[in-house]
Figure (cartoon, helix red, strand yellow):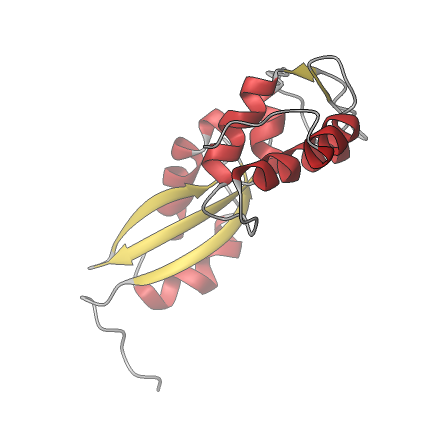
Length: 165
């Protein structure tokens, strides 16, 4: 029989779920059962904390200590860009091949870059902004009515000024 887990020890569990939906508790059970947690209750907690990201894939980090779990959302650049587009919720089972052809402002891009700065591998803030512009390009949206790749090229050449932080 495997050794029991120390209840005072802090353990982390990282999951990828659809925001605002109660996940399949049978998928959570093998991960949460050995830690002495109820998968159905944790699934409801995850759904409650991710309701702002309804319909989007979100990474969630569970911090477990003394058989108590706290849910933290680990934002990804794509989910933040799609959230900034303010699109209505679509059911993934009914609507396939969604194209996000909206428009966001450069201030939204700066805000997303500030959130993602700690995860970014860029040395300067302008590099993080260019990473977010690349995500906007892959999502399919425009920034201030322009193609994100053009803005990224202008930042690299020095024609477009980025704030320091």
